Structures are given as structure tokens and as C-alpha cells.
Image (cartoon, rainbow, N blue to C red):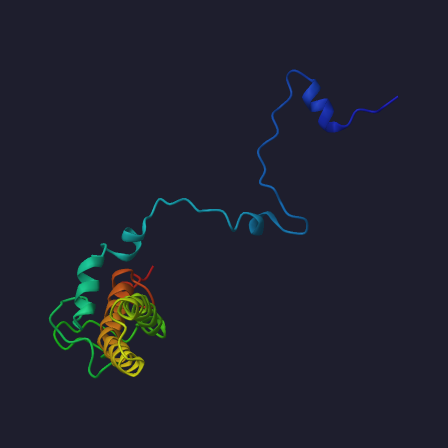
Length: 175
């Protein structure tokens, strides 16, 4: 004869208390850590925590033009690729940026996607001398890269400013 388990006794009695919902716990993990990966209550949005939303498109366009993403009138770059520490017009701190290799990767991606089909079309339709083709496309690749690199770096800094990344967030209020 089988002895009933405590679980089967609870389900067989008509007036049994329902078992409270428990979060699944992985073996050896405390309940606090088991629920750490779940999404928290989103009662406070990013805009409430960090102030008002910053407009993305104007920040990208200001950055593309080499201007401060905040005011749009102060110069962002003080050399070819060197970002100023602060905007001379509105005093926005710009030293927080982490553009790193992103603009270079985007430049290579864009130049490759523009020049490769163009090279194919020129070669198949015009059939120029190979030396002229190599020389002209080498100059075109270098020129396009030099044109795009500072603009993409400015846009990358503008994106980081608009999304409040890497220190561009509003200062946290002391609590």
C-alpha cells in the first residue's frame, strides 16, 4: 500500500489552501539571485530618471556637421579628429565620449559598399586601363574616407550625447 505524499494530500482535499506561487530556484542559488535577471517594475522611465529626452536627429546632424550636439553652434572638433573637452559656446562637457573605433569601422563599411559596386560598374561598362582604374579608385577611396571619418565621429558623439551614454547623463540627485 502506498503512502500518500504531502503534495497529493493537498490536491485531494477539496478545501486545501492553494500553494503560493514561488519563483523557480536553480539548485544552489538563493531566491534573491534567482530573480535577479527578471525585469524590474518599470514605474520610472529613462526620461524620468535622466531628465527630458534629448532629440536624436538634431544631435546626429549637429555631430555630422562637426558642431556641439547640445547647442549646434559651437565647434566639436579642435583638429581633424580630436574632440574638445567642452563646447566653447554652451560649456557642454564633451570629454565623456567613447567613439573609439566606431567611426573607422563605419567609414570602412560605407566606403566599401559605395566603391565596390562602382568599381564593378566602371570596369564592366567602360573597361578603362587597369592602371588608371586602380589609381582613380585608390584616390577615390582615400578621399571618401578622409571626408567621412570626422563626420561619422561627430555623429557618433552626437548619438552618445542624445542617448545619455558614457557620462553624458544628467547628474544624479543626491538622496
